[in-house]
Image (tube, rainbow over all chains, first blue to last red; front, side, top):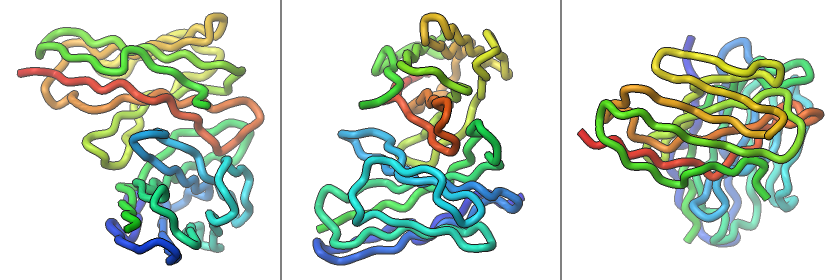
Length: 115
Length: 112
């Protein structure tokens, strides 16, 4: 099976702009999670979707949003970009459908730089 | 704050030696997972250990879990230069399906 793919791999934006990142999960996986990784804060959970429903959300401002489509592909959007949004954004998919989080399969990430 | 705290933050060893990394967490978990990351790339899953398991092996990897002490350890035996990477523990907190809470990670350098 093909792995998790993320597009674009690299992105440079300026403050105030908005950005949309895309994630295609492994075929058959219905759960998609998003994480932000920065040197200072480490890996932080953004949100998780399962069958087009957001099941869980991290402590990020409302500028960060996401959605999942019927084919399980997911997008996340960041509006009004700030310098501190510069990070590696990682998407992960899994078969998690029950009450526990199964193995997460991560994509290569999107490196976002905000100037 | 992070659920998991890892110790040590950095570890440098020679090829062939064993490497041990520790992880502590704060709340009840469904499972604990270990991941590896090479140079800012995506994470690779290593092992998942459930809360009712005490030890798990996968090749040169051995993971232990002590739920009474809320701690886990990852042992890499006979390390290789290719094991150089950052290693993260991640906890699946009970009642929070789909969300992993990661520790800050241990950076392992294996010298040839």
